[in-house]
Length: 154
Ligand SMILES: NC(=O)c1ccc[n+]([C@@H]2O[C@H](COP(=O)([O-])OP(=O)(O)OC[C@H]3O[C@@H](n4cnc5c(N)ncnc54)[C@H](O)[C@@H]3O)[C@@H](O)[C@H]2O)c1
Image (cartoon, rainbow, N blue to C red; front, side, top):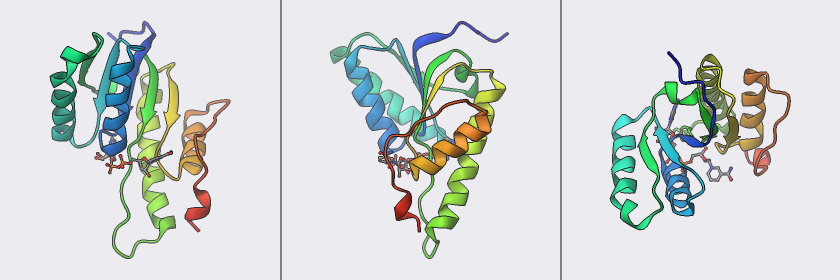
């Protein structure tokens, strides 16, 4: 049975690459959350990031840090999406956008399936377009984004 108790102090970070892991490292030092959990298609990367963060826990406020499953969306307070793929040789930015939009849609579908009430923070670029994709997919009523790099894709 799903744990439906919304936990505003639980953060799921989707994408454990450079941005996701840096965000986790910064957040863990702030002491403003109880749980930080990382999700990535690269499960070995997640394990490594979790172990690295746990290694420094002696110096941090007490926080539960662990590898997430999609079921962790259900009671998350905040879901931060930093997942994305990089440009292939010869690939246009618009083609890259298509692939990243598909990734975003899949992630949002997984969040919606869990009936999550979390605030979704989109970081993946192009962040304005992908925020719009996420908002449409989630049928959410409002959205905002952090920066505006769209002019870089055309
Ligand atoms: N909004 C901003 O201000 C801002 C600033 C910096 C970077 N970014 C963007 O953040 C994104 C991440 O950058 P990065 O340097 O961490 O990239 P990265 O390649 O290091 O990490 C991306 C991670 O996403 C994972 N991933 C891919 N598909 C996934 C999926 N379906 N589910 C879960 N994880 C998946 C990859 O395995 C990888 O670990 C990029 O799109 C980058 O352009 C945005």
